Amino acid sequence: MTISPLFLDLKEYSSSKFKGDLSAGLTVGILLIPQGMAYAMLAELPPIYGLYSSLFPLLIYGIFGSSRQLSVAPTALSSILTASALGALSTSSYDLFSLSIILTLSVGLIRLLMGIVRLGFLSNFMSNAVISGFTTGAAIIIATSQLKHLFGINLEGGRIDQIITEIIAKTSYINATTLGIGLIGIFGIKFIKRINSKLPAALIILIFAIFGSYLFHIEEYGVTILGKIPSGLPTFQFPNISIEIMKAVFPYAFIIALIGFIEATSVSKSLQNKHKSYKVIPNQELIALGLSNIVGSFFQAFPTTGGFSRSAVNDQAGAKTGLASIISSFIVGLTLLFLTKPFFYLPNTILAAIILVSVISLIDLNTIKRLWIADPKDFGMMLITFLGTLFIGIQEGIAIGILASLLSVIYKASQPHLAVLGRIPDTTFYMNVERYDTVQNDEILIIRIDGQLFFANADRIQKQILQCLQKKEKAKTLIINAKAISTIDYTALEMIDELFEVLQKRGIQLSFSNLNGPVRDVLIRTNYVSKVGDSHFFMNVDEAVLYYEKHKGTTVKDIVLQSNNRKK
Image 1 (cartoon, rainbow, N blue to C red):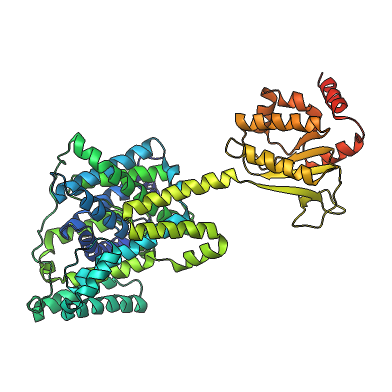
Image 2: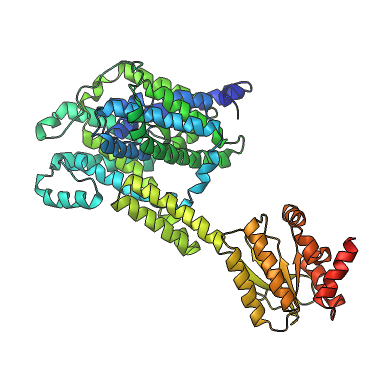
């Protein structure tokens, strides 16, 4: 973890890198103008706050972030999460603007603290199935939340079923002009992107919409326009906080901090894999994202993180270092100082169109299809998260997804796969008898445990082993292939002790093969090696089988005695 990856990059900076950073910085800076305002509207905040949120967070991440292409500003997910949190917190004595600033500060502090105590690994506890289900549900919620601006009608419902019911009930009130302009915006952006993906399609449509609105006075036809937007850079304001409001904000801030971190790291890691010239450091990312939000909160920003489409544009435009983000921030600053007046005539429906086009990429049907083919359990987890997000709520959907992930981990750990092994003819390889044609000795039962051995699965493993022994009545020795066992706890040790006693009474010798060093050390410290006999621990299965065949006819008691004498 370094204080500033950008400073390290600048030590080996070149003119070719600057050209790439300049091109990317200008491109993303221009893209952020319509996108930032659109996402502010999605967060139920005035559009100017989208520009504020695209200024200092982007600048700070450019200095401290470990990804060279990640672009940090408002995203669709962070904006809809912010809107959801502000809606839930609106009953407090704080106004929405104060709440958004406190929320941003809390998100930043949580991420910074997580980075300092090195909790970057937490992102691994959200499976791709859960992320896919959540983002798909959130994308649909985001899209439906913008229908009121696209249709030009007032929709009070919060859930998707309520919104659809209201749209059906208010069909006759839909403003045809508003809808027409919005649809032209959607198809225009898609058309321009198809011609040249590098063109700032959203900005081009935005400029045409402003000119059209100004020339034809579309507000006279009932089309809502932005109106006056304040000019100038945001002023420094320290959030007015109290212990009570921080307690109320914390649950929502934690969810936004975690989801935003996962969103950012998934993007930055995919870009890292493409370039392979640097490493994304999760804890450094937490610190950079935390500082971005902390500083942003002092300048009236709402929560930000790294975005999918914007970072892809940054990469395609040639970004080589964090300097590209600093240049983008400079472009936003110039816009705030000198170019806010023209946005007076911008129709809200165009901002809705920009949001609708951007969230389409969040619905990844290919991932959903692969989940269905690869693992129905993962598909089911994705579906539960999706339905929870869609019909219960954003925060609830995330909680359901995280809980589903944890339950999945616990279930898989408690249900390890056990395989009965047999020898492949004319080899020393021992494989699963259900998958290969093998040669088996009726007096030898070989079992491979494909998982960890601990309290959650010890009892189940013992029952499965005894069931296998019942099917092999002539067995005189049990060989456990422990290659996949990397840890063992006290409960598992007790299970092995109990199993050993049961096998001794039946005249069956217990042996182990392929034990790793740490597990063997535990068995030695707890005297299990002495009890079982140190000559019954083998490097591989074939050695164990040869040992049994050599001592065939010797009683278990005699074998143990030989082992103890050998140890002496």
